[in-house]
Image 1 (tube, rainbow, N blue to C red):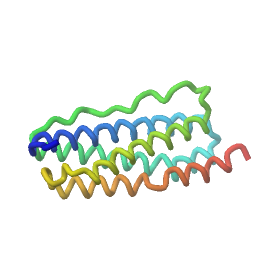
Image 2 (cartoon, rainbow, N blue to C red; image 1 turned 60 degrees about the vertical axis):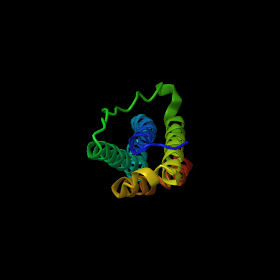
Image 3 (cartoon, one colour; image 1 turned 45 degrees about the horizontal axis):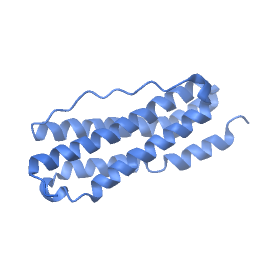
Image 4 (spheres, rainbow, N blue to C red; image 1 turned 90 degrees about the vertical axis):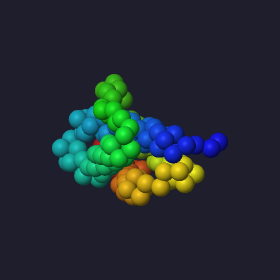
Amino acid sequence: MAYTSAEARQELLDALARAIDQIGVALSALGAAYEQLDEGNADRLEEVLFRPVQVGYGRAKSAHAQFAGRHGLTSPPFEAPPPGLPSTGAKGFIDGAVSAVAEADRELSAMQDSSLWAEVGDVELRAAITEVRELLGDVRQRARELERTLGR
């Protein structure tokens, strides 16, 4: 399907919004996991998982707003959803966050591989997507390492 430049920009903006929503899900889940952990494990979760996801979330939201602003499009406010029931447990919340980050990464990867860039060619947005993917890149591995030590 051939896109106009305006349609291509909107499509990329919508794809980025879907990724941001997933990162928000991850952030919310990690916040809930933090609340259920002892101080030492909570501090480790904050350092190795929460902080990179939070920075990635902020960078993605900023890129969305800047891209929308450059092209006269709207950028809605993004809000992280509630994390779910406390009975999910810290490990369940961490696993949910890992899944949400993986979904966000799939969306960002599809954006990077999209033919829409031929219509858009926005260097700043491409760089931001790369940066966000790098921030989120090893969340699964860091989560597994953290989970191995929980409850010890």
